[in-house]
Length: 132
Figure (cartoon, rainbow, N blue to C red):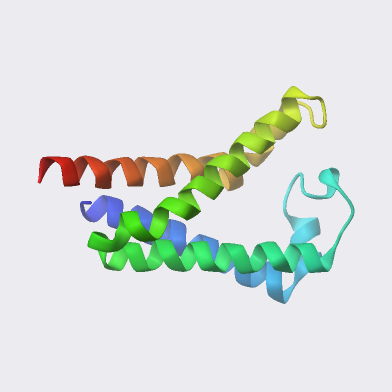
């Protein structure tokens, strides 16, 4: 993974870490601040904090993987899988009518884009291993 990829992985990891800390430290402000979240169910501080811990772990994996690229694939395939499944779940919500199509635009920066970036980073690492 090149310097740009490492920078993207580091930024993605730091943003995920920050989001997780915010979710744990201030679950109710997080709930009301993030567009679309209040539309998907009632506030539950326990649930928000549970997911916050997950974001912290995933962010840590991306940060560590960006600093030690030879470990990136090992560390980041599970968080990448979760991000992809999370994004697909949001698409499913639209397909079955839980949310309108505007939810996909509303969620793009926080749900779909991280999944796409993570997949691209993993692909780059796999491609680099195949060439080396």
